[in-house]
Structures are given as structure tokens and as C-alpha cells.
Length: 311
Ligand code: FAQ
Image 1: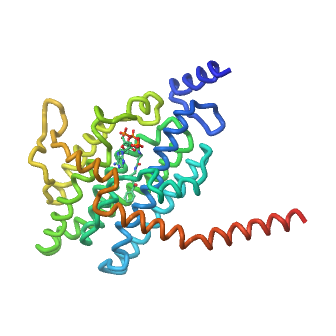
Image 2: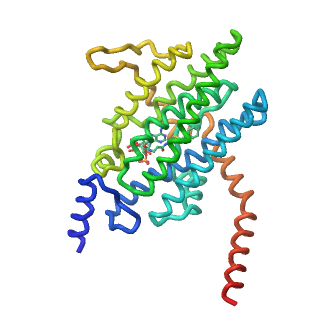
């Protein structure tokens, strides 16, 4: 009966063992995972747009090949995550519809524009850097298919991060104009990158339960702190200034103190009024509609194959 199933589920979580698709799970555990994995998948897919903006304008064939490969990796991560989500009994079609109808979220960061080519490097360095910080602990998440997906995604994302850092360090060894371009880009992306970890723990409605279920392994503030500590020496190595006067080493805590991002801006962006929200969704909706004939053709083909087998 249900009490026995719940006890078995709780015991699996307590052992830090994994819940698998065919195991019994509380409905709220399932719906929390669908919410988080879908939002993660949508972020990968929408996240192709800001960088995709620079594919046709990359400064050399080499840079263009690198950027193309990175954006393709993001498509792969999105599909991988949709598959993980499908093991929880929702279809990719359903999830895509929820995204284009604005009923499911994606990361706030992708609602900011990419105004210069340096943004390609900054996204790799800071946005992929934040993504890795958040996702490495998710390799140990309690839901099997999500944790296994994270292992591969993290390997590719570490590579993306190095790519961004290398791009910026090349520009920093270039002209004064290039150095200024990098600094201006870092100034714009630093605060939105801090917002990627979600609201402060006191204002995060989902953290407590998600931690108890082992869906999340660290809180939003813990991960934000880790990201700041990791980014400071990297900024020094690059020779850029992080735009926060409150950023200082606190020897007592063994961490950097830093200022809070503008949380009103975060909530506005999440609710749809960021600089690029409308554009991102309109673009995704158009791509989905333009792809209808491919889905129809694939479905018709699969049906005919099936009929041939039956005959
Ligand atoms: N943006 O109670 P919490 C990438 C929402 S990396 C938008 O703290 P939770 C790689 C949250 O959903 C980016 N919404 O929520 C890449 C909730 O709303 P709801 C994707 C946000 O889930 C790099 C509400 O606020 N990574 O794509 C954000 O416990 C470069 C309250 O928040 C992931 O998704 C936000 N930043 O913690 C691609 C990682 N933060 O649903 C291309 C997996 C919070 O109740 C280029 N996700 N919200 O209406 C997570 O770890 C968690 O879901 C958090 C949020 C930490 C994001």
C-alpha cells in the first residue's frame, strides 16, 4: 500500500541511492522534477539564440567552427534533457507547447542581448561557468536519468567554459579597443550570471523540499558563493574587473563577500519583461511552426514502416 511505497522511497533517498523511472514516487517529487528538468531543457534550447546571433559574424573561420559546434552541443543537451523528462510521463511535444505558450520557464540569463562579439566569450566564461557550478552537484541528483544526463552535459560544458575563457584571453592580449570590449561585456553579464542561481535561499520556495528529496544538492546561495569564489582568480588572470565594489576577500569566512544583484530586475525578467523575452519566444515559436512539415513527414513515414512490417 501507499505507506509502504513511501517508506521504500524515503529509504532510497536516505541511502543516497537513485530513484528510477519505474519506481514509485510521490506525485510532488515527479512534478518538481518535470518542472526543473523541463526548465533546464528549455534553457539549453533558448540558450542557442544569443550565441547563434554571432555565427554569421564570427571574426574567422576557426571561431565560426568553434561557435557552431558549441551551439550544436546545446541543442544536444536540450534533447538529452527532454528525453530524461519523458521518462517521467510527459512528452517533448507537450513540453515544447508549454514553452512557446509561456507556461514553463527557462533561465533568465537568455533574455539578455549579445551586443558584441566579446559576449560570445563572456557567455562561455561566466554563463557556462555558472551552469557548471550548478550542474556538477546535479550529477548526484536523486533521479537516475537526470543525474546520468548531467555527467555528459557537464563534460561538454567544461569545454565550453574553457573556450570562452580562451577567447577572452586572446582579446585581452589584443588592442585597447578589444580589451574595452571585453570589460564592457563582463560589466553587462556579471549580475545576470549571479541571478542564474535563483533567488536568495530565504525567498526560494522550492529549495527546502528539493534538498530533502536530493533533487538539489546545494542551495542557491551556496552555489552563488562558490561561483563568485571561483570567478575572482579567473578575472585576475584575464585582467578584467568584476563590477562590484563590495567584492572583497573575507578571511574569517574563507570566502569573498559580494553585493546582491538587483532582485527586482530578476523577477521582472522571469515574469517576461526582460530585454529579449518576447523576441526569444517568438523566434522559438516560429521555428516550431516551420518544423511542422518535418514532424508530419516523419510521423507518416513511421506509420508506413509500421504497416509494411504488419503486412
Ligand atoms: N531563471 O524556488 P526556486 C544552461 C524560478 S544553464 C528563471 O529557487 P528551484 C547552459 C524557479 O523556476 C541554465 N527562473 O526554484 C547553457 C521557480 O519558479 P517556479 C539552466 C528561475 O527550481 C550555457 C522560482 O523562480 N540551468 O542552460 C531562475 O528550486 C550557455 C523560485 O525559485 C538549469 O536550469 C532563473 N535563473 O531553483 C546553455 C539548472 N531561478 O518554477 C547555453 C537546473 C529560479 O516555481 C549557453 N535548475 N527561477 O514557477 C536548477 O538548479 C534550479 O531549478 C534553479 C532554481 C537553481 C535554477
